[in-house]
Amino acid sequence: MHEKLDAASHPRLYEIRLLICAAQADGYLDDIEQEKIFRQVNLDIFSVRERQIFHDDLEYPKNPKDLASELSPYITDEEKMMLIRKMFKLVAMEKVMTNEERRMIFITGCELGIQDKKIEEIEQWVMEGVAWISRWDAITGKSRLDIKGST
Image (cartoon, rainbow, N blue to C red; front, side, top):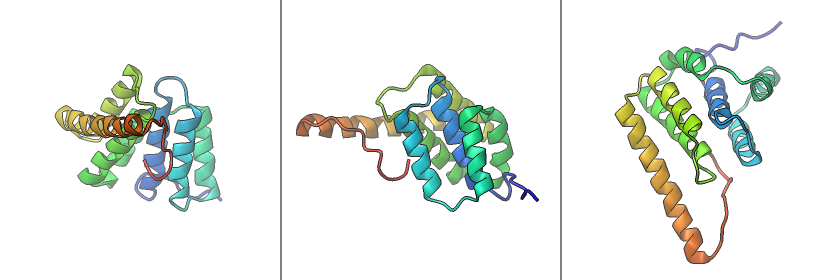
């Protein structure tokens, strides 16, 4: 018997699914993005069935607007903004964000009920952080992408 895996009873499942959508928005899921997603999955306890859903999403991209619409009623405004922050951070890890990735995050944010101005503010904050890390790399003479920890 399959357990019911809806957004109401499994909001973290939907958050990871939306991170997968963000990583796939440019048509390519690179190793760094995939590793970051798997780290997020390992931060929580997911059933075998839930992990199968993640792998299915990796193989067959889903519609982020539909996922966000299902999730929206079950998470707080702060959790919605945190999810958008995670999405921006994930796609900005290579210090370049494609138009497709950005557009997908804005569509998701709007579907979650976040105003464009707030999404732009979150984006700017994340990009400032990426620039700050890049500056440290320049100072130390190292070029690294830190994929440790959560998104």
